[in-house]
Amino acid sequence: MYTLSTENLKYEIMTVEEAINFLGDMVYQQTGQHLSRLEQSIIRGVLQGLTYKEIKESDPSARAYEVGYLGRYVAYKLWQKLTKVLRKSEIFGPDEKVVAANLWDCIMRALQQGIPLAKPADPMLGKLMRMRYRITEHLVSTEYSDTYLAEDENLPDRPFCLVKRLKSQSEKTSKMFDRESRVLYRLGKHDRIPELLACFEEDWYFYLVYEFIEGQPISQELIEAQPWEEHQVIALLQDILEILVFVHKQDIIHRDVHPDNLIKRTSDGKIVLIDFGAVKEINTSQNSTGQTKSCGGTQQDYIPPEQAIGCPRLCSDIYAVGIIGIQALTGMKPKQLRVDNMGNLIWQQNARVTPQLASILDRMVLYAFPQRYPSATEALQAIQELGK
Image (tube, rainbow, N blue to C red; front, top):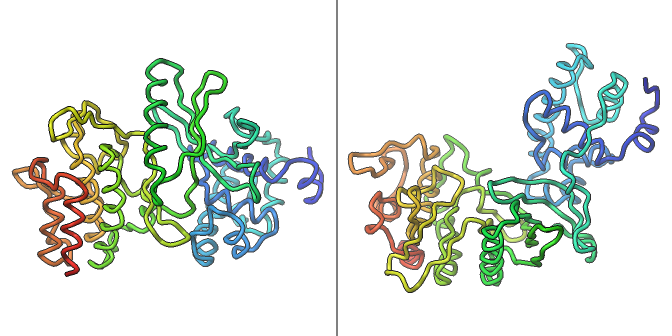
């Protein structure tokens, strides 16, 4: 049994990162859920003795949020979650609570109860890639790849970057790697698309390293039952379509436009389009519809019918943008909306919207893709006409 002081625990038993892993493992064992990156940021700062203001200033994951939101919402919910876990583990009594001031002591008590230290399940964590990129966190896993947060140790202040590892070493994976690296290199020249920093093969795996965008996804702002004002929606649509104009002019369909892939950049509030893992280059020798035989995409609520059956077009991206606009205007999730006999969405009665914008959005999300705006260029022109 451990009978060490908090200081001994802090410096002799585990590091701050080990403490985060330890708490994360406890939470996962009890709830089946992982700590979010923002929750880890709060824990990291508190264990280092930082205030919420200092956490916001020092941790890129927290910079996009207000100090009050970090303390009164994120941290408050986090302490509630940890309290429930410790009570369920019989480490805490019914009247005890986790707060920032006693977090180290809570960890020590858990150790005293014999709960083992969490071991990183992923051998990639802590690994140094190309003598430069230090893997710090696993962010997301898909059928084809794992994406990690990393620090660039060759640059001042060790800025964050993202490292994507393709899972398979097959010939198909090699083609995917070649395709995505070429696409990202071409697209990354745009100010609001992450830049490709490196691509390489190591230990029989393929890796892509690209720019980390500091900000928060617009999914954080699309809150149910809290509709946006029309001028806000117009600005959002214009922001997204400006990026897609560039993408579509490269004969590329993104195929995965949804709120989690649209990051509001902290530095200037502009929208950045991320995650081109589902992109499909158009064979320009085909007909003008730009048909491709590939489904792709992860958020089914934003995928149009033709993409669902494996035949996305440029206007498939337009459909996704239109759904996001309607979601913002109505404060409703896409799956809550009904459709008419033609398969078109019924939504206007749930929104305060002018006929002009409603008409544009209706055309963007038509079930029949030939009737939609054919690409982002035409959709953007229609949005820009609203301001004249």
